[in-house]
Length: 301
Image (cartoon, rainbow, N blue to C red; front, side, top):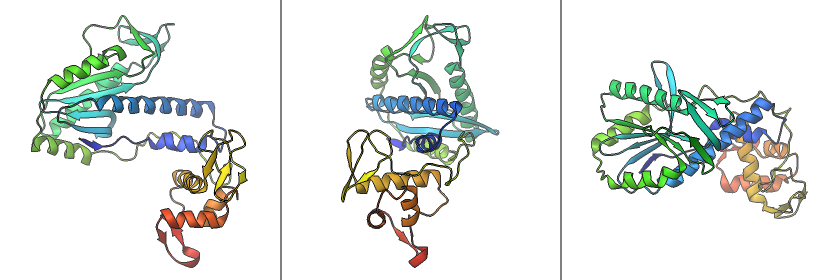
């Protein structure tokens, strides 16, 4: 049972919403690519883990704090006799371990994901002890990309390579698991400690005036221009998208970037650079959102 679904990180949502509307600096563009790659790998991991058949409780994207130190857990799986701590990586290419250093085949050193896993394991053990839980903890470093190779991989390690994933799952399914109230109590305790907003979000400064306005094509990501009664045609990819969908996508990007501003017909009209008629915006807002306030104070949530 999944107790906490995986959601797209706030930082990733913000950068994706900003990308077509401002020129990102290289460091921000690189951060966006890294976040997209990581999230793609985590979704791939989730799909693979649906093959697990035994009773378990799954908590995804868990951000916890121990003695002022924050640490992230990609996936925590609670089974009858242990906790499985999963760190997921979506790297591709050839890598190798040189002592405690993690390097590309060309010899360039990069962050060692084993260090990240060890850190999460150590801190989680401390947290579990403080909560009075002494369930064994088993860490796993999963490389989900089939184009990844770890040359000279150690025989005994928490590493699961792409070629080992199916065998690992078969072994997991051989062990029966029956959950009790103590497992639920542990899960609830961890969920209660989840830090909802990460203080490490890195997003460039922006405001409404400096961002490019317009309606963005859901197929190619370019700005749309021509409008028909029920659809808008993208001159870049010739795709046609329903007005309802376009209004909702435009509202979504507005809410992501300006969570403290009210959603009004005028605000979305300006955000869409007058591409969508006000009457269409108002109709969609009334259809899919809840009306709040009256007259000039009318807005939608």
